[in-house]
Length: 83
Length: 220
Image (cartoon, rainbow over all chains, first blue to last red; front, top):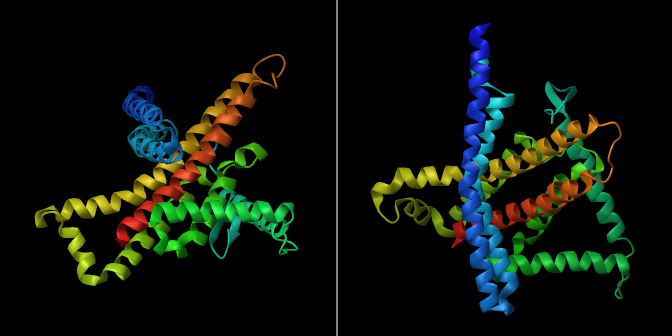
């Protein structure tokens, strides 16, 4: 059973490493929010349009982070290597 | 957070928790619609004002995002956002949300995908539709096809990942709190507020917005 334990340990480490993907969307969404605040400051009357566009862009930027999350979830809960 | 339970079989198809919760949500939406549209009059009562506001807001959103000429999509988009809003906030009334199951989100994303293909083909004609794959350069055809197929994948995984991630964090929080001597009732409330209400409604809005953008982009 040593091999199985090794696979489990490596899967847990892999899940942790996969979640490093969360850094990218964090930076991207922060950038989008900063630009959104800037745009609202410059043009407060267009606030609803700006917020809508910003949320859409933030959601698209989030996709890569979600892919990382799904890889981590597969490694933790539906591990293909354990057979 | 556990996977959806399987309750039984109907004509050889498994009845999962997702399916049952979807039925419950369908009943809830029907009840809400029946209450809001009961006894409609020229001079609206309270319920009718709410119903009219919801329809007007959605009509304005569709008109802004897709253009005035595509107003016929507004009923579908309102139905989609209603279902998603109820399904994503199912955690606060104790149901496992149906959108935390990949089968449900892939179904919704495939509906969007086939809508983009069908309405793109219908409004551009066969020649214009096929020519769209050869732009800007003919040798980019494989990349265009991959890009087209990536849309439903990213749509479904975004919704699924957000909802399942929120559910897992809530389950971890509850299992951590259950280990204490007494149960602190106030601690889960802000987490429910964020993961169920804020994140759920935001994701339903985003799914609907992206559907609108994809369909209107495919059409013009």
